[in-house]
Length: 424
Image (tube, rainbow, N blue to C red; front, side, top):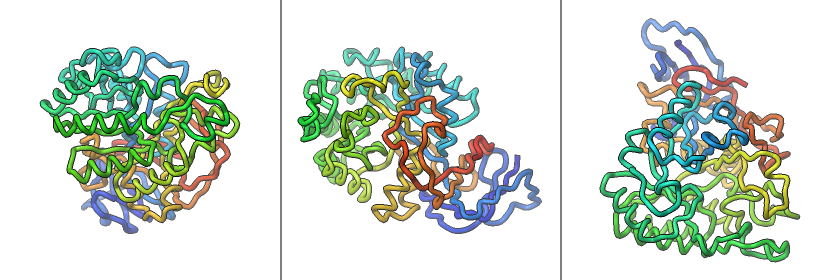
């Protein structure tokens, strides 16, 4: 299949490309940019006038709910949601049922994903057996099966010695560890940020120190072991400051922020809006401002969707009993563009946070449009505004606090491996 994408604004943040030109795709790869190869005859031409032609988006936190939670979502529904949102690569956390702690489970998930021929799925393996925080998994075998990193997901790892041994092992064999910093005891039973809103509503609170104490511990162990650690979903201003200091000390750490934490704060919980029941909880407006500033100055490397589809019954409960999570695969691009517009971040720099930067954390050859690279492409209209409605979302989970919000950036086509897998 030979495809010519013409008249679009080609933006490739990794290679510093931002110009109006044509992109030529053949045999699943980028064949040429600007001028057609000799003897070129396109099987199909896509007119991208008024659109941006960018690398396919890469999402570092997308729960696909398989295996074990098919009643919440299926691999088919979430793959459809991914390509509809321009996401061509995604990493899925290990907190499935059973958890991704055995090579057979990882291989099965990758085989299922490949058979759908849509977005590329990169499993994140369990750091400890059954995510119980007691015994380390066979990281080497899991890596051979296809795991790109190791994590506890949202499961606690309270035993510091187990964490220390895990980081020692990971550093020895070059594995990457992704951790969401949260002290299990300070966060126990909490459902909202420890602030005025939680006090007024009588909700059990999670203090900011739950994140910073965990961060301090992990950073100290990184300094001791030299392990490469990615901090998943920072939520506090003090946490951003600690990561900034760690990076200044040249420690091998990276971090991300969930898209919804860039736009919402604890005030948005309103009167017990269960759509705002998230993990980590929505923090104060001061924290939100620090997260946005950290993303601008590069302290925070990238934005993830933290896609967590939840069935309606689990959301239609009192706030403290509702299941946390929000659907996000289809909202990663528009919410990132909305942040960039408000904070006056150039479009190429904004796109880097959801293409080249997550590819670097994953250590995969993706997130760019160099000649010869895989033709994973997202074509979108940055000036087209649309209103988020449940009926429009392809994800099986329709839960999001952004329902009714008008956002910029509508994906018109997505290519994976040179094949058009989505068209609006």
